[in-house]
Figure (cartoon, helix red, strand yellow):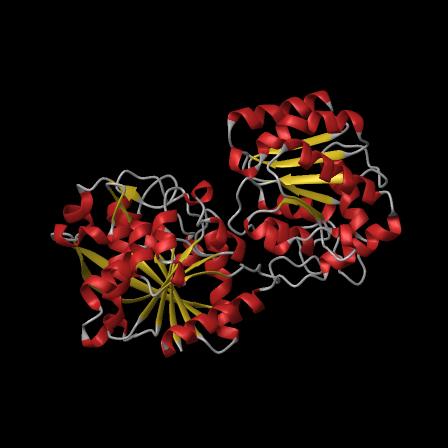
Length: 475
């Protein structure tokens, strides 16, 4: 079986969010199961030069972009047994600033989506499956359905589209349809939704299968509260919708070998976790106390991560409970200001670093006792799985992948602490349950070991995708 995995970002080349982690990990997991999986992504100027230096030029061709044609170069590299193709066009991808958010993103990713298909005969590849991800590659199943499916060199290819976050859909005015996207008005219905052009809607319409990154999120996005307007088309196409929980890279996130934490430890012997806690407290300027529970937040500081709940009750918790809090993140001014206020008012209880520092994030996972993730919505979430791996017990709201990966330990079988309602005081009650649990050293050690032994590797997820691939091919 041959799979072409299409993503707008992928580790180790470029990352802005969780998609890059998935695109860097899932293909490797598939390769280990003898599935020939290759990855294709744009060649952004922001990719590090040492990675670019290892690329080999393969070929070039021109890509139809509406009424014009644009150059596309193909570069190739093999990393850990996975072949990566990087598509080069300096006009579209040699940009300052972030990889997204440019005035012509619709045209940039229309080019990318079509270039993926145009590339195939030039590199001698006919995949069984083209697996696309999020709105930036959503036009690939659309173009395939409209322009390529009946060509002999493209026949019988199946397409899959994965929704990592339904909030970002690629919505543009209908005036882009012909001149930018290159789809005639008599086929506008494929992309048209709520009087706009919607890239994600087109993929849902045209792909053979649609997946999301957790089973619970697949159910949630049928509800208008979660769907950002796409619940109608998703309910109509529910027969092709499923959810497969993401995994994490257990080599990258391994407390036994991780060079970024203060002291290594394992599920069999995590006594050194207390050293990580002590040094983390020292780094954040907090009293070095083993007896006080230390809770961590590593997050974008925005509403949908549940920070409004934290803002409502955290000061009350700090004034009534013996606890410490360390925060790493950046985002909305109101939340950055709030955590600055807490840090200044309670310097012995609250440590703060604004921004995102990957090495420090790992130190927080390794050094904290508890990890707070009260998200309003969370398609999958990786942080709670990483926290488990490092023995930091998650406190989460039951939504999306948080619900699928964390179960409440009240039954003496779970791996964390959970609450269902999006309510600040429900969260506070759950945090207090966790703080109370920490006072029982023997029970806490049992919980930490259970958490660290959870298997959140890509093994199960990769097998689920393989079953889906096989079903499509046979169907």
